[in-house]
Length: 407
Image (cartoon, rainbow, N blue to C red):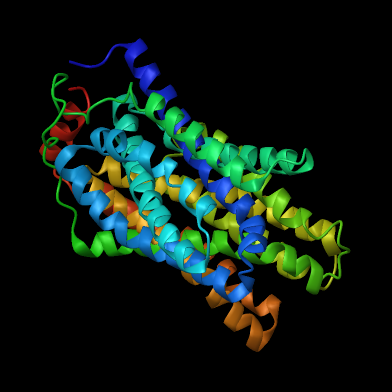
């Protein structure tokens, strides 16, 4: 039987809370890095090693997380691993030296892998219950959680609170909040209401070529995002000669635009459909980067900010569309984990790829990489989604649609 409206809404509120909690933990970790660096005297190289280790371990863990979700459902994986993953934020806070921090960073990376796969896969399952777009707004709440963590960290440091104590409190509160938020989660569509364990209904097989294409689209989307995360402020400072007060606002306007459009992305996708939404998102990001590149010759910081706003609007919707398409095609949590893995890979490779090209050609040349990738997604993305969503026979499509009505 289909869950009633109240049950469905409680589940959606729970997913909102879990995404916001996860974003809060990630934001608290990022905001605490300067104090961890100062406390342990790390320096850029050793701090970079820790961050790289978190990404690599998280990436490797996503494979295991997807397989566990295939077997035991995303709801159970989130309930079993989610609170512990949030609590792992305590580990870096207590590390007494660099060697211990490496171990703690690896543990934190395991938590990141389980949480990202579990949340993204479960959001896809919930969207199948709703039978309309709901995923993008979850990502918007993740961004809001990260922003809240940064603001509270800044406030705490201003009031003289210690960074270690704030991280410990944040980890404990986040673990409790995550446990509370995952209580109303639903089993996958197609599983009986009473089934607390066991595997969900078998997923539709998706060909390796289509999965590889979706991975590449996800990789490209996150490489485009990394261009703004890592280089927006540097472009303002180095290329546009913006002063110290204005340069950091480049990433700020990008992040604000991306958060707003993540919250608004579901109605847009519901109206346009996944293919046309990806076309719009890709060309908006392409135009945004084009304005940023042009700002070095004319327009200055104002034109660059306009470009970063446009880029943020487009990038905000790209990855949620990919997650949703995998779910609509009947993919398994392991299939959805591929998109999460593409994100970690893109954020891992993006800064280095752009940096090496920028070293040889200048930062303007380096930022041409995400601009070209955005155009590629606008062209290749809709073709891939069309093949993914149209590859089933009419009978298969009917069975998949009926499965969404069964709890």
